[in-house]
Image (cartoon, rainbow, N blue to C red):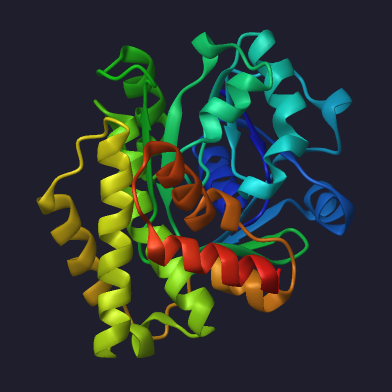
Length: 302
């Protein structure tokens, strides 16, 4: 399969390397020293289990991208507008488009930006990875998972085919019957912990282990679920319990990517996480005090 990955950082690089090693024709959109290293030495992928280097095609811009069967968007939400023209062009030439971004609105934003709706899929990923040097990416987490599904719901041969491509490359993957529900399930986790860790400027452990910190996270989880339900997403008490159990099982030193971005002083995904929950809550008439406070306080800090 011809696969173009828009975003050659930790997530895009890790998946791109695995897909290239599995025999797919992978193109990475990159720039600067990273682009130069990819062209000169190939892509080095490091995981807890192995290291390998693989040849990939590296493109500097839209004019260097050839046709693709699949375009994978692996950027942060604040960079989505930068790669939207490439996604639009590739989709117009027949590529399916799979966004693997945090939040629940990436696909709709791309459609509004001109990507044909019939070429758009919904998707999410669970992985902790980063680019650690030009041409080198590292997956720190033991897990790597991709979920893909049709925005309209229901299983499709297209989603199953794409999930199989990832699975055959050694990436845990599944085709979803309800990708919207899966995206909101992820949001019940990542939005509250991003808000809590951002407000405290601390890893998950000290917050979770303090009674009021644990209460803050739980209320945040319930706020996301309430907003989702108001928008027609069938989040259940079991979903809430599963999210809280996952939080309770996290290693104490883990920091969400939002906090890492905040500490680095660069752009962050506030608008796609707790900022989005706060905004969608207001639109749906659902109170979201935890998310409102985080949006106000961290918005000032930004």
